[in-house]
Length: 233
Image (cartoon, rainbow, N blue to C red; front, side, top):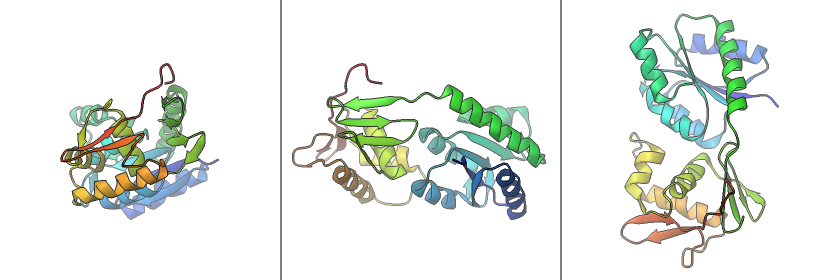
């Protein structure tokens, strides 16, 4: 199966050139030209690697890196920022590689292959298991099993579930979910969180009146109430 690359580059000539080189190397490529377009596409689709321009028309590409990190997607930053300090800042954000303009498309393709090879070798599947295996969350492959049957979650639903799970039974407010899952640029409302929680509960067959996994804490937010299985990471 072809590896799927998300190319975030607002210069359409450069984007077309990179896309052509990647496709000639047997990659499947999807292109976006702004932060907003990118946020929309990662909500709907999954990718093996992101090539990210840092200077986009609606903001700085660095603001997207945390989202990609949470989704376990490696990132190659592409930018005209060439100083050592700027490169170090990019790596500190979580970039897996960094290439400055102008660059050779062949070099970029080689870097893509190297990052994917390194990432696939290093990244091991971590599985979170709850309620004696009733719910299993596969953090690398972005899969969720309920009673050993795979259920389909959107990237946002997965991020919310993972975020709740990571708080070990602690209460998480809607405001925190919006900040950490949607990002500070999100201009929606707290009810958006409630809608995603409702959809999650439906897919998890979770009764809000007698929850197995997601409990509403009235006046505060939500908490994950599943029981973690021992030694099943």
